[in-house]
Length: 390
Image 1 (tube, rainbow, N blue to C red):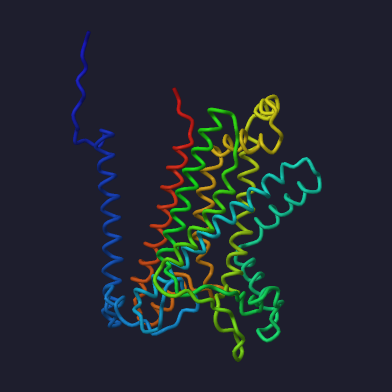
Image 2: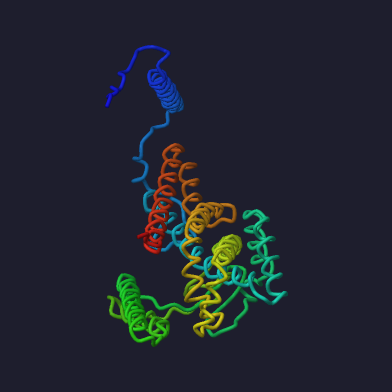
């Protein structure tokens, strides 16, 4: 058999490999030149304006107040801590929005497939209306509705003892003085025990056919263990009840109108997209799966939960990942209604320090890190539930 030797690189324009290498070198050279021009021009402009570059400003005193914070913060703290407060606010809103939008979207998506004409049409109107109205407009709507429709603090609604609803937000009693760390330990232990119990229930069902619900045990664990951890922490627990003092309430915990409007807008807007993903995922499961589930005595609800949804989930995970990423990035619109997320705090920081480039880099790094973390988790879960080919 005749052997063919591969030809070496010919330094000729007629050689396609040589041309490809030249083109790549030219493109890389142009890209490097553009980057060098931008960096050098930026450094020159900063020098002309006597603006010091670098991240040393993070250790300086911030000097501004933040309305809502998950950790202790005062204007005498550093810019670093202020930015951390904004990041935690963004993460908390995004996490709550993802959970609530998923739950609401699943309900609306299933309602779109309902045999009841009225329910399916109402769900369709919900999806088509909210998907085609910009999120920023919806945020303005919810914020104006909360601020304009609710009464002031002196005329606040009093639905329950110690609970007040006004245009300053929702005030309710809260226990203070315990340890937040022990409370979080209780939450994680409850989550771990609930997952272990769920796995054992599944194993028992496969072996014996007996089905027992896990959620009652989970509810008990998530109530008892965090409370036990809270009271085991250092400090004497004290019940803080809201009281009207002057023009506002003092004491207790407060859910601000800005947070409420932001969550309403994000959840309702995103749930419309989740609903379409759920509807299309369920519709993609062959009809024979419904018939097979019915042939072994499963009702429609149990067939949906045990047979159809697990198969549809494999279809829904990729588009759900994009939807969750969009929700997290859309939370940056909080600056429009005054909620102190990371974008709002960075804007205040760069206005005071002039470190615009550093501030933008911090925001980009934060959103990039969170987005990649969500993508990694969703891709891991997608691989975990994927069918293994033989």
